[in-house]
Length: 441
Image 1 (cartoon, one colour):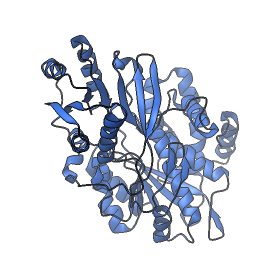
Image 2 (cartoon, rainbow, N blue to C red; image 1 turned 90 degrees about the horizontal axis):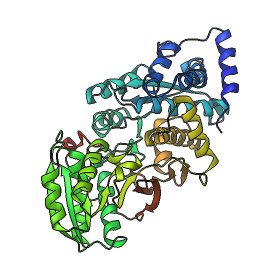
Image 3 (spheres, rainbow, N blue to C red; image 1 turned 30 degrees about the horizontal axis):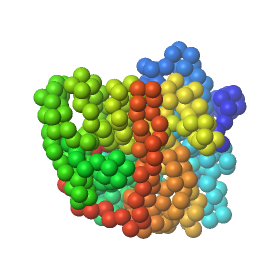
């Protein structure tokens, strides 16, 4: 359940009147609110910023007024403050924790405790992510960590979580090596390898494509990994590659490669990449009259509908803001996010919210507060119903059994085309080097 702004604001006034104004980590509530609102303020109107203060500040103060550490359940959030998604992730975590505490907290072994949230910033680097994790574990005694969301940062933190026996749940890291061979590290999204294979199956089975072209950034590990997975699955399924072209990060003119791809008359063009680069490529492809069906990956988000440029276009995503047919919980989440930050949720917003909900369920279902018990309960989780869909870990290690959304994009809008799924017995396949995670989402 999500709460009305006015009622939460009244709680803020009550807490402020008793002088409870400091965050357990030493930052003032005003400091945290400023950090939370930096990205939103750049995008929201003055009215939106006022809503942000009235709507989000109370939650931060509720967390700040928690009981002493021995009487709370401390959870850590690792965010990358250099990304515009950071404010949204903080908001989602704060909202999830406030909902838990509004219900009275989490009951474990007959005792109920409130959840206490601590936030640490990666400062945009894997080294910063590792320092953030050490601070949350060492100083704040975090029982579990949510994040980091980027693969390069998650790979830096995962060995520490494994060594310290701390559950780490990454909302959005996709590189296969993040969870490989680890007992304490989990993620909420499908991997690059799985995405590539599922998109190849879609091309072969749904589009009846017998030919394809590949166009990816040779300097980008994410593009290389997912393209190789697509290539292997497409050729194994009987498909033929008619053109393979690469570019390098920073290039803005793709005409020469697109002309050769157009000349190949491939049925499908597989184009993993990121939104701004993809936008330029689609625009130039339209100018050249390239008629292939475009297939993209989760790196395309948050590409807007007008970028389709008239092409038949599909790309993968981990969550799509709900329609009128969605669950009341999802609709309420979108409304609260829009009110507080002035823009719709990123997929990272919903994934972060689900991460805290999933941890809360694992903690409550555990027989005690021992880290091993929480890990085992999480690893045995089946059909947790989150904003982003049903999530199961049983028999999967740290990688969830979860559908991947295939989004259809036209100039008039983006819609859910279908879910891409695989069986419980799906094999995760060969690994690529962890060093290739530098640019994986």
